Image 1 (cartoon, rainbow, N blue to C red):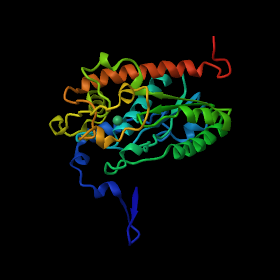
Image 2: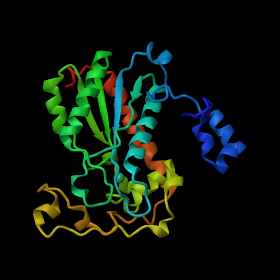
Image 3: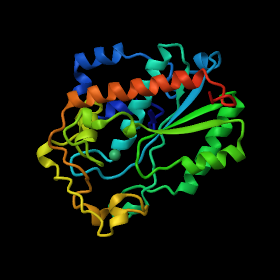
Image 4: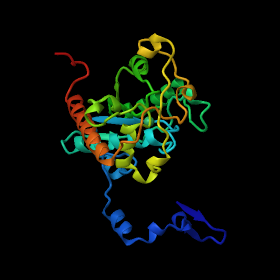
Length: 288
Ligand SMILES: [Zn+2]
């Protein structure tokens, strides 16, 4: 970004930020070695896009919300973006042309409106956004859309049903990356929100945004008094501030970056296999 100065001079905004890292030659060589990823729409360019036929679009969808004391508000956003990118890279290397759309940073957070700056976007607004995204994709011949959901409060199941009436040309589906495989194979206690699993994932993808684990609360969850709700076969909304004191659900104390690395490799591998199968299947002929 450039700033216009009064005397007609231009100044790079980056130079206004006195970062010691900016002076670091190892950082400049790191940046120099970074490449444009052709499967990330925000990074690629018209020159490449205009001549590429894409099999599938991926739409990561996150949230911006408190994650215990130690994790960034953008945790779900960073996770969705990274997992979509890793999966698309693996698929791209196996000749499945996937394009990752920019991650939607706002999720459904109606149960956290009393937690400071938890950003809520209602389901009806999400549907309006999806309608516009689907319209653009269909205009350019992309007829398969996979939502990479990164937030438990988002639920696209009924939107997919409604979209099938509004835009029957589009095959739309949604996956919850955090439900892939068995997290118990990777973590002592995976946790539900800002616990060992999520903390390990962020230790792998955005370690500089984490506070030390000594800053984290225990992530203790209060269970519902009513059995049906406790057992999960009755669904309602959890009033988050009644469930937890530190906004976390799950103990993050045993998190490590290595656990996060291994887990994300499994998750992105599974998504990659799904993308390849989906690319090679006709939506009108999906059953054996
Ligand atoms: Zn989260």
